[in-house]
Length: 480
Image (cartoon, rainbow, N blue to C red; front, side, top):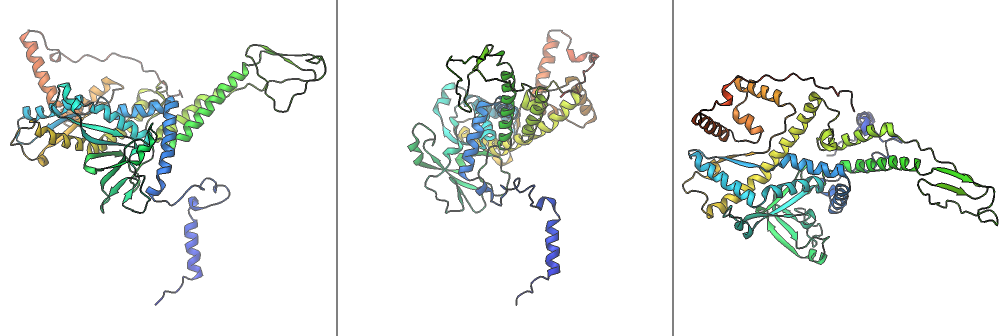
């Protein structure tokens, strides 16, 4: 039994329903704008050739554009900072034991240059779209004397995770990564040498490594996405526009200063007749000098007017749009806060700091947790973990990152004091935002109080709180 075809009236309603969306219309005005829109799946849209092209251009821009380079490095500095510090809590276990384990991990982190690896991974994620690391044993770490654990990370670029012998016939094998039925990676294929290295033929030699030994740091934006494009992608055309506009403004200023004056004579320049000059011939000009011309010729200087009054505004708009793709305010990408007052600066940075916190949360779950568990296995073999502790599933740990700098420390201190007194926040919450351990802070205060008492010196916190000096805050609300 077959269904009857829809009536003309129903077909007309369906067409009108689809056509009611302005964005679904295609006409002469918007056809060029939507010409590159497609229905590709995430992995087809991010095929190896496309990702390589975007990586090459992103790296080029970051190597030649101070704003792009500063943005990538600045985000890594804000997310990673001086490196995460571990705080461990094991139920029923003395704090001295848990602190000893946490200190042992932090010592290993310093000996293995773990914060530096995280910095490179984060910059690679923003600039290239994804970064890879493999767990290895590095005996050189033992020579530092800080740790008996030789665990280390070896970093790889995205070009080295691929299979030159893959012809795209296996849907569960995406550009060097094999996935199981649940969509989880189970194996990575690495090429022995970087395809762009000195010995490129080594790129045909492959090595397969289990997913339990590999860290893949990227941010998926579509369901089923396996590989990523640079996070700088939306801003790459804007960086090019910024460069062109800057060069055009500079060129106008240079051309205005190029011709100091023009002289001409009725006599032929060579004494034998008019000089023949081919169309579009170029004449080299020397800055600060006069120019002589053949008889019958004249020269007019181009209008040297340059868009000096709009250059700053244009530059600010372009940088603001580039930063928006990274949830970064204008002063983060420009390094210029002259146009901010306290309120606008704080408001802008609330959004940016929230994005940094989300990125740190992803880092904790996808990278730090796996590194800590891998370290626990080796630390147990090295005798750093006491016997008889509860199973690892009952442990809990936190990571302390560097706190955000305060725009107005006095106002922030008043807010923290009020929240503590009202019970809205705890000391752990406030010090955790600053990247500090609240128990360490209390114990340090106790030691300081005891030392002041032993020396019979008044403890500073015993006196009244100092009054805030009265200052007039400049208003830059009208500044660009």
